[in-house]
Length: 339
Image 1 (cartoon, rainbow, N blue to C red):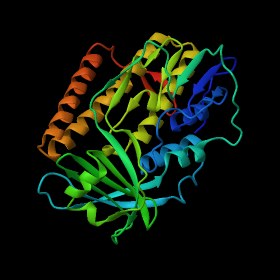
Image 2: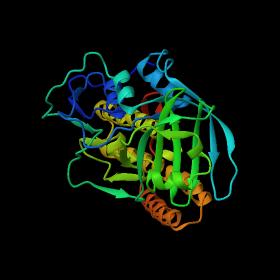
Image 3: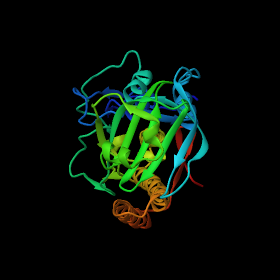
Image 4: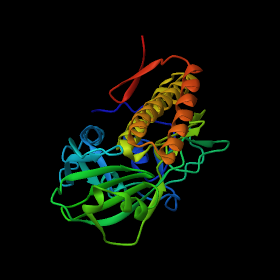
């Protein structure tokens, strides 16, 4: 799809090394690309699932129909969700890739790094974000990822199991190995409770990668001259499996807002639209999490996380009630006014 850039003569600085930053660079081809001098202070997710819609979106952005063809593919998931439940097999088509490898696939061969102290716009796709910005957390759960060998015969399946104090998620990265994601309690404690996943994996290393697994949002998300995007703007529970897709969609909207502002649209209206759209996206995610968490178990860990989800849903409702109606919509990669 051809981009209407409108960035000639304008400086746009993009901070970050992840998918959202790379997509913004692609969608704002005249922008400066200001990479962080050091990797941002967060752990990279070792294995993520790229659903078919996210794959198609990235192929469209980059104009590369061959993207992801060589990645290991998932074709179904096996789920045991809820106390006393039986395993259920569901279709699920996705490609498996590490966050680091995905960024490498999307990074342009020649990626100029230059100072952009006088930038007209800044996209913060990684921290730090300008003060005063806080982060609202709607949960306390963290995840740890541990490398495992796969023992079962269902090599093209991902596995999900809810337990009394959290849940387990197995993501294969080949026919023989993959990653075990433990959310809530420790990996050992959750495996000791497991009726499904414990028999499918064997821990192959004591090394763990830890990262937050609760929904969260930067507040504010934007202000005159800058926008937060990707992991710097929103965080998603990995249960829903679309964090990367959301980061890509945020990048599309952020780039469209900047192009519209450069074309002469009123920045305050554009920023209000951006803020409301991202808040609405988080609200939908929280509602989906609530439906999963309320059906998973009835223990105190689940009750505590559900209470925080309810707080987040109420916060999003208040924010959207105070926001103006949506004045724009995306047409391809550009914003147009709603008639």
